[in-house]
Image (cartoon, rainbow, N blue to C red; front, side):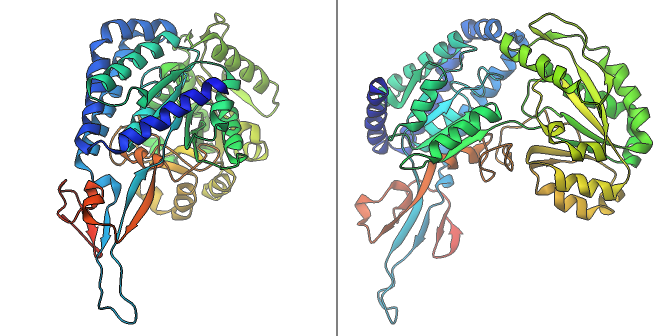
Length: 482
């Protein structure tokens, strides 16, 4: 704890210094981050590829996403309206009591602890969405590197520190730490930590949540803990597009060896189409070879989970995983009836890898029972014609309650980084369904509302000054305007 005390004291000092920085200076730091990271791409891409077993092309694309989201937040900070500036002017003549001048906006929380993810060595790691959204909010970050890609993390951390120096930000706006589970728990317990961001397993996220809740001062934990992301296929849609949908499903299931938090590990198919769809999927999945997983531990866990599920009598195997190298993951698909799926919670647990369960259902009434039984998900996808949607409004209403993002075509594995994206859903997919870890609204996880009553004009934050020097959208006396 003594070493962590020093880290948190530095973070708190940085937080005090950041508060005096202008909006333009904060945005310039983020822009400098993107430049410094891009400057090291010739070394960063092969390093990340070697440590993660991901091909250079995948890492190159992920780097583009990482730089894009940093610049997106820089533009958000410059535009400024995210702070929800609200002004209620004074009315000294109001009866029976004068009305005070009250001005409200979102302000940064303080030092934030961020845990890196294993499956995205760039976009959800050192300079990933959690880090950049916390920095954009004005919070210093103490980052715990994921042990699966230490060299990659150090390279990016160095680029962030260089960006801080070049843009005049305090050196300790970002600190990079390494260590195991015990270090992570100590970081979560530290009294100067004000929020935690985590992407990973349910076990890891729930442990951090419980630790933070047990503190003398509980703090928010924004844990994205995985999901099975069900697809619900309807009869008419399958009748018209069965082969194309089978191709789409296998492509999504096996993309990146199934190592995405939005991997569709469940698909619900009507009994009338289950045999035909199973056959089409089996043919396509057989053509997908085993491939290296992110690291040996993930590969071993994947194979152990498959072996456990093979002991379930209710499951039949559409395509069994083939024998492969210890570091590789082979795709697999099992099948079960809806009644048996409902009766066993194990069929809802995430298997991190290219594995899915096909659930055959009898009718739309049984779909409602499935929706009632379904746990919280990051995504749910509906493959249905318009008339099928119109006939199942009760199911639609229920399934909306179970996810953070509801798709009506395609597959859930693509997560767009933008203004409208929601990447977070009801427990246990995340610890707080009101938040997102992707897109600009991720910034609001690390801010809290503060109201200033009758504060002298010259002491007000830029965003709340009467002249609106930043030219941002504000709610003034109940009216949104500039």
